[in-house]
Length: 318
Image (cartoon, rainbow, N blue to C red):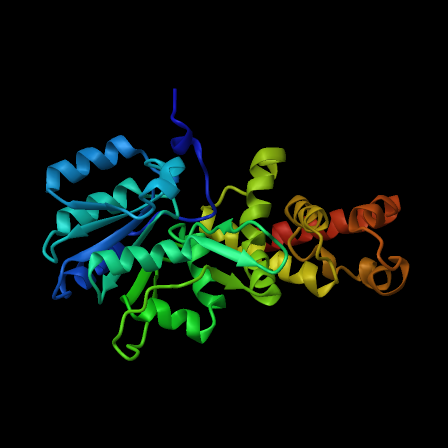
């Protein structure tokens, strides 16, 4: 019987051997030990324990202490390895395949200061919530959006302890790397929680939509998922959701229905000539997309199905 973390599926592709070797080169060029950051909620801790023992790697649990006891060994962990420990890195990449749970850090501070700043990233205070929200910063689906929305003064906090932070892209072919310009060189301990204003929080939610829709598809309609690598599916979801927003759809159930139609017919169904007038005139103000779809007549469905067949055979012949 498979463990829970082994059954989890994500909208990402496996890391290519070429990218793995590029990461080996990046780490080999570091003057100091490099750090791997793992999100253990997606990984098997027993496999990690064996790997750590085999290579004599130092382990630093980020969410440690009485306030974080509930995380146990399912929170983020830092692994410190020497620049020439390429075998360990290759095996680590293999252990994390198809899971957005692996990134690399080049630190510019001592371990205690780095852990303090990463703990600061773990709890976000928003305008609407009295209780801080847990931010899975070690999940690279979150890492990319988190770093994208941080304000300059918030990035400065990271710049005091990190040179760069990198991870495999969704397609497993490219290396995403955020570099942090050195500030005044002083490390300041965060004196308050990480705060997101309404715009930052909204941007984070929007960037998370493709993954939320992907998980909804896995749970509710796995049969319509295309036989493609997760990274390619993610690209298609990003494109379809951008089109949905352009048509004024923002509610998650409506976005899900929009994607279901796209995957069931063809990705650009929304641009069909038979829907052009409907988008402009027939859809009532504030009407749910799902309600409008239920009003479509049979001849409209037949036209979209015909276009879907034409799109399918067109792709097959290219």
